[in-house]
Length: 367
Image (cartoon, rainbow, N blue to C red):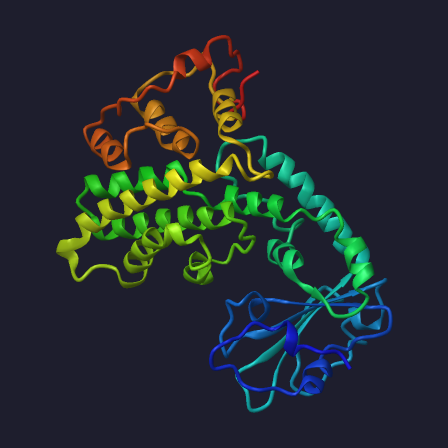
């Protein structure tokens, strides 16, 4: 009989369960790879979490079709057309559930290849990449493949996932997370209007995105923000004070509206501190674009035909802090933009643009 207990993290308050009852909901056949993953394995789970299984079949069979899927009385299932993608059920007398995804070995291999292509694309750009072709790459599954346990046919699982690079998944997660200039610019507009409530919401979003990025620098492949506080506990002890400040502000907020302006500034300080740590460690992470290369990517976006103004200068002042020390703080950048002025920095933007000939507006790229 397959054993689950030894692969599960110690989850406070978790109900006991019968392994046979769990396995009966999977519809496993000989030759399948059965992977166990999810929050009950990575330690971020709760007593109401699900067992997250992935069945990787050699090829499609009757389980993959709506009319022939072996349903049980209370089971729900997710389909894409005729194709059954997953099933969902609960364990009796427990908060625990059982989720099973159905894949083929070929589909997993194709997704890993698609992600490697996406990683190469993201490693060649400096902008935040929120439009990351989710129809091609299932980031949730990719993350689970980095730590999932193959309960059956482990040698086949190792062969199929041999091209999987967890650091590359962490970098694509980072590139889709770390705070963006448009979000900061929105925050400034709200601040100028004295709409501190909206500005505080924007500051919190920018902070959460940036701290998610910080966890990805340290190897976290999970993009789900609901577990962010738990992932922060896994950062090195040297960052405990910074993580505590973040959790306090993010989880418990402010006592009243009068404290909102100072809370916004506190968020900006936290974001600056997170960027400083990102700068400190990223060069030592193999899959991450190092600081020098990142600045070259920023440089490649500039071109002679830009109409130079304070706004462009401030944008690059914000974005370069991912890789450049000594830039004005976000408080200083806010103050400059509030005055419609340029924050003073030493970025050689005009020198970077010298000789670049791409017309303005052409894919933000120079040649």
